[in-house]
Image (cartoon, rainbow, N blue to C red; front, side, top):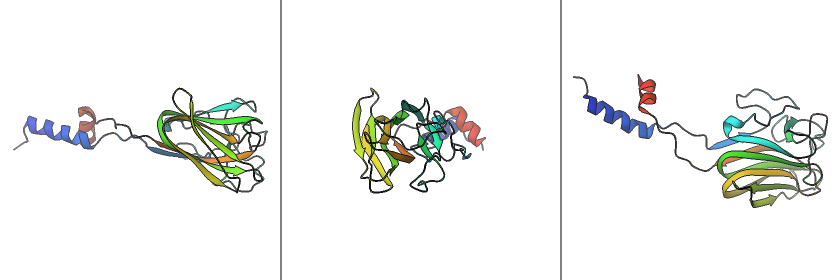
Length: 200
């Protein structure tokens, strides 16, 4: 005997509460591949390359107008993830950057984040800085590296909608591996049509 219509509707409604459409909570941008794992050559413009992951990039400085991958002037050796770092300078320029020297990389998020980290690689013993901003662009926190080699620097705060990073003030450094953990949000529920399509 076939289940009653009432039973079938109740079953699928209950199933829809469990099988919600997942929303990506964590992303790691290594600047070496795009969101489909295609390699990114040095000098690739990446302003919106990771937009589908909720992250876009803006150049805050005068070295160029965009954000790029780079393998230029890596005097420290091998990046934490090979082969690229991220920079505000086009392919013809060196990839190390300075907050007051030539500007900052800004990463903007399409929803609230609660953890953001970046690998800072100092020029000599120079310091790196990471600054976090809320949806009104007010700075809510900042942190510095120690200048003692490659170091992951992180900010944990509610309502992070953007970060900026560079060498601290007149210091220079390189940057790699942006990690973002977004704040929990309600998953998009499975609709009746989605449920039927998945289990027909």
